Image: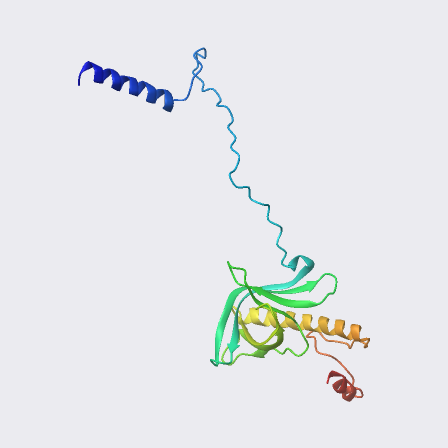
Length: 211
């Protein structure tokens, strides 16, 4: 390497050092790094602030919540199909006081069950299992529009299945009382399980009213 090439190389090193090393105040004996000026860049594309997405759960109180897996019966194929796993919640509206069941899938939060707890629903034990219930829904809104469905809900153990049943019956009784009040009927006495009580004398009248 000749002298001219060495000079060029030395000058390149000096330039690189000035670019890479932080600037220092020559009057500062401690060699503290001077604060660099704040640089602000305007974004090329401005993102609009997203509106808050409502799930309508904000207007409801959670009466009961439990982990479960949900299935629906597919008539064309005559088999059970899994809808998802997540928290099954019984929600009571703060104004109307009506109670519905809502269940969302884990991670995606997609709705897999959305229906009111109505009087015609009956939890039936699934054959060969003590931790699942089968019931029919006249109007489930999980797919966006009302559809009749046959659903099966399975829990981690039989104790959780029984807890869900008891809470389901309580909510069913509360909805029944609301329906009676709206219809102007005298609400009937209910026991802890949500079953209606009545004397032997008016048993026939009660059956006619239920029908």
